[in-house]
Image 1 (spheres, rainbow, N blue to C red):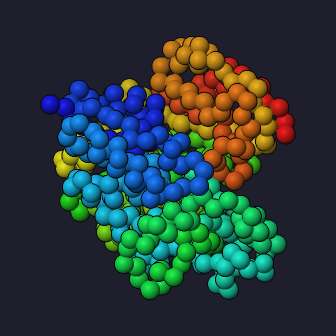
Image 2: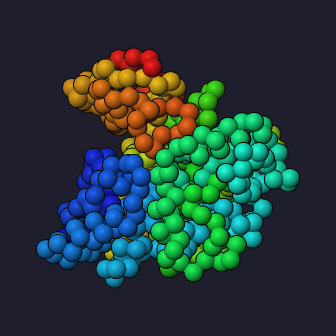
Length: 424
């Protein structure tokens, strides 16, 4: 009998990637709520957990695994639901310790040296400024968010105060839901008094950004690979993710070493994870940006194209209590990229590429995947989960035997994808 695996936020790309597993016939995958249900509007975590449990309780069959590859609230719903149904999963306390941005920094301070200066803010203080030990430029960000939502780069007290004023007037999407999680835990005194909607600041790290993926099984850390995160030339928004990384091998080894120390020190076990870093080639400084307690769905095709197996495979193996699989260099391509096709001003969408236009490009260029992020009639700023500086139009995966091939293919695709957007 096939295993019944429930996936919080199962999407079309996830379905396609899971179908590539060499033993896909051994599983039946069920979507447990859509990502729109999970992340749109104000997040009501209790209601989401109740709805998920209701759907699981009405399932006529065995529940063999509950998994997910999205950020909050999915990353924290997984251990709660798995505990209810007696399934293997990561520990909720360790998950929060990693993903609570301020608490994670305190733990990193105990374990490693590779982190930026940081501090808490009183977001209700109209005269807020950086803590004395910090200097601009800095990032102001919520202690819990996703997709860089609510994070702003600031270069002065005036900019910082303007950001906080904007946040005070914005609807609160995540804070109360995070409070619901924190209330379940026995927190240390210096964390217990911090509300879920608190804000913090970190000195801005510079250099090359990258993400290392891996998993921890039986308290042993296994590292899958490093993906470069490349920004637009004159904006902090991501342009693309590239695998494998082109960072110097010595730097990659440092990243691997720091990651092992952090994952073990934070007590994260029985889960996939990814950890983001900045490396400055001018100073050789390495800074850990954040720890995520799930693998990246964005990277799934990249690992499959280059290594021959999607990173979803490790998630499924861990959910079933098995030793995860990890092939290397068994794919058809030497390199692959995921591109974020963006617009940097608001607008109303009047036309998007048709399914036939997209299918033609995907069939013409092997290894190409195109996913629209907007719909006709939509105002770009109405999309949730955006970063603070741009609006996603589409995501495009390209492959090649060299980085130049993936770049040329992306440019070809973008020229063919016709959008009509009215400036607002």
